Amino acid sequence: MKIGIQGAIGSFSEEASKKFIENHGIKNPEIKYLISSKDVLNSVENRKVDYGIFAMENAQGGVVIESVEALALHKCKIIEMFHIPIEQNLLALENINTGDITEIHSHRQALRQCKDYLSENFWTRPLIEADDTAESARRLSENKLPKTAAVIANKACAKLYNLKIIKESIHDLKHNLTLFIGVTAL
Image (cartoon, rainbow, N blue to C red; front, side, top):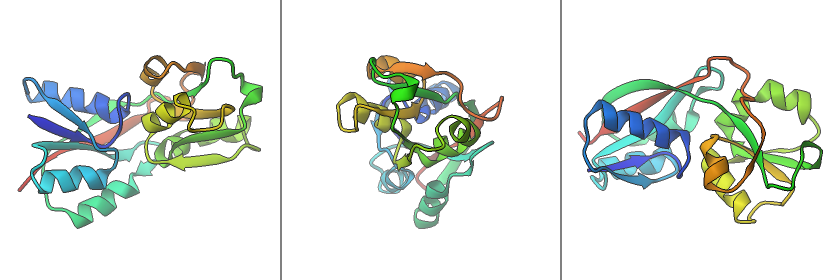
């Protein structure tokens, strides 16, 4: 059973896929990390994966525009809609401290979810939109971003990519939930 997800290893979509797998009693799933909603829906429609999982809306960040645009281009059947709690964290390389951070990378949704924290603490630093929170963490760990960059991502990414958690739970809403959708081909 192949499941395509919007996100990389360590992403919130990966967490959502685990809930979907449990909810549906799927045995021995193969997760395909497709990064974008468009690639997930394309893979579902072309039957390269059996199911697709992607984020649709966040309580703080609003509708995930890339998912709405992808749904307009592809046909699918919605199997399940469910929420998972989202805890955004500020991560950096091990030797970097808050004052060293020169820019912050993450998915547009993560940046929106942390806008108050970012405006209070990093108002002079550029916020750079990326295709995925976990991909940003991976890129930082592989020296594909400046050493003084930080990323906003899932806590799991710190361990996965050998990054330091500078600050936990930086999202503005106390109960930060994201609605995920599980789909299959028509």
